[in-house]
Length: 371
Image (cartoon, rainbow, N blue to C red):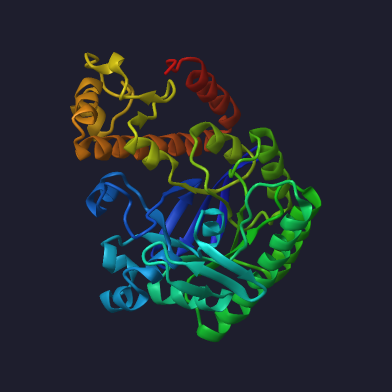
C-alpha cells in the first residue's frame, strides 16, 4: 500500500497505492471541499497533473446528499475526476464558528451552514458516508480543538479522538469499507499527549496517520517542534499526513521532518485575493506597481498563465473584478506548488534536499517585494 523509495535525512519519496491509482509522495492535495477546487474544473486539474484532492464528507452529506452522489456512481464520476480522492470527516469544522452544537462521548452534533438544521455525526456514520461516496482514503472522525494551552481541553480531545478511531476501525470491517483509513494524531503542543495519541493509534494499525490539530494559530517554531517529535514516533512504513498546511516554506520544513502528504485551501484562497506564489516570494497583484508590469507572474514558471499573460493583465482583471483573474492565479499557484514538490522529490533522490531547501527559503524570503 505504501513504500518508501528514497530518503535524504528525514525527507522521503514514497508511493501510495489506492483503488484509483498510485501517487508519488511528497504530494500536495488541493482542497475540493464541496467536490470542486474553487474557480477550477476537472480539465484544469488534468492540465495541472493533479492526481489527488481532498473533499469534505460531512459537507457533501449535507449538499447535494450522499444519495445523489451514490446514484451518480460515486464522487469520482460525480465531479469528473478519475484520480485519488481523500475525504475528511468533518472534525476540522469543530474550530469553525457556528458549526458545532455539542460534542458528546459518542459523536458530534453539527449545525448545517446551509439551513441551520442539526445533524448527529458518529465515527460509524461518517465512515458509512465515506464508503458511499467512494472515497479512496478516508479520515476518521476526530476532535480538533482550537489552539489552546489548556491541557484539560487538549487531553479530552485526544482521548475522544482515540476512542472514535477505535470505533471507526471496528466498523470498517462491519461495512467492508474498501478504501484506506487514516487515524489522526491529536495532542496540541503537549509532547506527552502526542506520544500517547501516537502509541494508541499505532497499536490499532491504521493504513496511514495524519498529524492533526496544528497550523491553527500556534507559533511556527512550536508547530515544527511537534511535527518533528510526532513524525519520529510514527511507523516508517506508513504514510504521514499533515492536514491543513500549504505555505511553501513550511511545506519544505515538514518534508524535511518526514511528512509525506499535505493539503490546504491556502494557495487557492490566496489566489482569489490576488496573491500569487513566485520563487522570489509572494506578490499581491492588486497593487498598483503591477499596472504596467508586462512580465509573467514568475519568469521561471512554465505554466499556461505565465506563458500567455502578464502581471499587468491579471492586475487589470482584478481591478475590473473579472472572475477569470482568480482562476488564472489559482492555476498558477497550484502549478507552482506541484513544481516545487517535483523539485523536492528530485533533490531527495539525488541526496541534496537540505541544500535545495535552504536555497529555496533564502530566495523566497529575501527577495520578495514589500507589499
